[in-house]
Length: 167
Image (tube, rainbow, N blue to C red):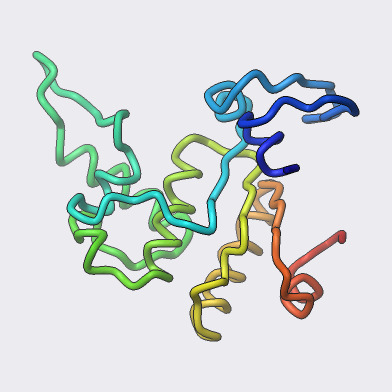
């Protein structure tokens, strides 16, 4: 419920949401996104027949004159994001060819492409092995060091204790 309120799916019926110390009323998913709130759902929302870059920037693709897709710029933008989180995926790789863990990392890059300042992660390790979990935690720690707030939802208490500043 909290995740859905913060991401603008549900309206809060009482209480207060503070963002940078200021009270905000989130009026829908687009508004939450414009406030810098990103969400990574447990079920991935990627299109397997598109590339990693296309999935990250779907609906926001860079255009050339006359509205033609600037695929080179699209791939450069995706590579910049992937480099930021030390993700070694080629932007032209089809999502369907990636492991679930790699797809999860593309979802993180997608959220960051919206300049998320708060990132809500719902059960992000549900389908990951131990090595992939460590890779995810490395990215979470890096984002935290960059000032991105992480709301990490999990039933795995050992993970919470390893990754959380506050519970």
